[in-house]
Image 1 (cartoon, one colour):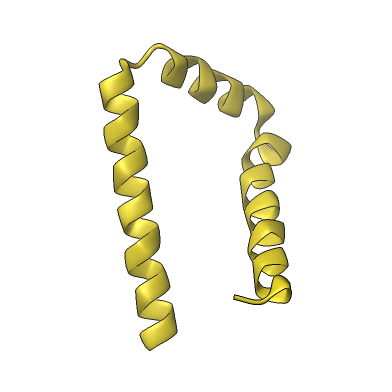
Image 2: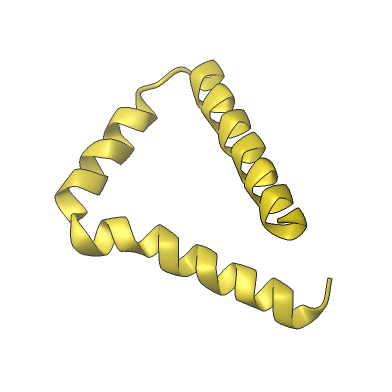
Length: 64
């Protein structure tokens, strides 16, 4: 992976992660508070599902 691809990926992460707080700060605060109350195991499962979904999407995009 070259630096340009890595930089593009980081930039896109920053953009997408910032859309929610920019458009709906109260809703994001509520979401974060609710997430903070979840058990560790539940957060790990959610994280694992998100990683798997990202890997599937990346594979699909690259092998189109």
